[in-house]
Amino acid sequence: MWDLSCLDWEERIRTGRSLIPDLPLIQSEAEMGLAFYDELRLPDVPGKPRLADATGQWFRDIVATSFGSWDPVSQQNFIRDIFVLAPKGSSKTSYGAGLALSVMLMNTRPRAEALFIGPTQAISDRAYEQAVGMIEESTDLKRRFRPRDHLKTIEDLVNQSEMKVKTFDLKILTGGILIFAHLDEVHLLGKTHYAAKVIRQIRGGIDKTPEGKFLITTTQSDDIPAGAFKDELHNARRHRDGAFRGKNARPTLSVMFEFPQDIAKEPAAWRDTSNWPMVMPNLGRSVHLATLVPDWNSEKEKGDQAIRVWASQYLNIEMGVGMKTDGWPGAEFWASSEDADLTLDAIIERSEAIVVGADGGGLDDLFGANVLGRETGSKTWLSWSHAWCHEGVLKRRQTIAARLQDFAQASALTIIDDEFVDVAPLVKLLEPVEELLLPKDVAGFLILIDRINRASLLAAVALDVEGPYGELTDALALIGVTQESGHVVGVGQGYKLMNALKTSERKLANRTMKHCPSTLMDWCVGNIKIEPTATAIRATKQNAGDAKIDPAMAMFDSVSVMVLNPEPIIVDGGSYLEEEDLMVI
Image 1 (cartoon, one colour):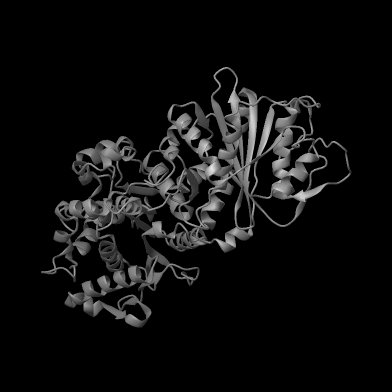
Image 2 (cartoon, rainbow, N blue to C red):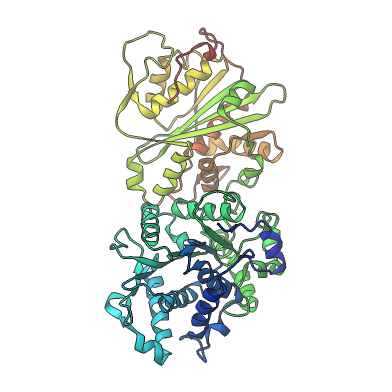
């Protein structure tokens, strides 16, 4: 087993060194495979140069490593997956087509199959045209390979193997024996809900052959990474950073041209053009600063959306909160206000008073809940959030389905169906009954309130008056939490939340408001757009429908009451810690 980690990658990328660690390659295989690759010619460049001259050394190193990690004598494959993060314009598609042809030339397995998979038809067509163009530039290759344009397939006449170019879909595999697969621009699949399943199919096909290799190339996404892209990106980083050293994990080589953290998180640093060469491995070939700098200067004048797209594609800047010029100002301080040790249990233990907010709840929305505690002694606000959504949202909003499933896997979101749940044995009702059936989101919220109520910490429940107000108040009344008891407060929306918006951003900035780690809230906070009205401001969504903000709005509902410095309303019932059978949905 080879150690494929690259722990000194930040030093290497600062000094322009290779991001591939020193490996004991099988030199005969590496040299032969690279020799085949080098002799291919770029068909769409003046002079049609050999790839030996046209390819950046960074990709030639990948080619040599890919071939040199296979030992044909012992039949050992020391690298199965290669993940490459390189910016737009790095010729990934052309170089990948050349690598696939080289694999076909090196292949000794009859009737094998190599795949180039593009997320769109245009990318797939581009790869096929490049491969065919390379064949047409060589008399020897024209004798060996036969392109079949209508099938986007290149047939090897020597051993009847095929190189197929396909668009990403569920029917991508047909039971072939894969010796190589190249998946290009996987960042475009972040919103494809079946992407993880197809990638699993590709790996399954690769694993049918001991020599099989899976190459993934991509730029960053112009949105927060989600779905299959997020999984592959984070997995590659963990391999690079040594998380799998000494473990029996799938051997993965990560070659990732991204800024060190001190630059990536500081806009002034990554906007500095002197730092750009770090993440542009093809600089001086297919990428030129003389062209990029004027292009950047033009794009940044167009506003936030243009900046996001340009920076993610050309500089591999990962999108997160705080990137939108018309976003909520508090988003800039959201990440730095995260407390890694903060949990719901910790908030209950550390708080002297708690306000719980709720927002949303329609069948096309998330139902967001926020617990906002005021810490004993320091008076710091401590925030925890959760959300529920109906499974129908995954069908109606397929562009965010993969993202919502990620949140559910992280326990930040509960996906519910139409069935009801009996909460009678789970909460302390004013009038005990044998059975009390409630929708699962309402039941979960009621159990949360009951838990805080029994801890004698509940100061108020702040409800969006435009949400399912009646349904929630009816459920809360069953445990004695009512407007009459002083617990339930209706919160106006729109411009009426301006004080909550401004107070939250100030407290985040001065570190007197902390929040639990939550990818759900990171996303929601980043989705907030601030719109000025004639006399105030209001929070809305960046994109109607898909950009959910309900849990964040629930937080503002909590803040709108917490600013009044409320005290807990003591109720009869003692501490929830005395109840041995308490369960939380």
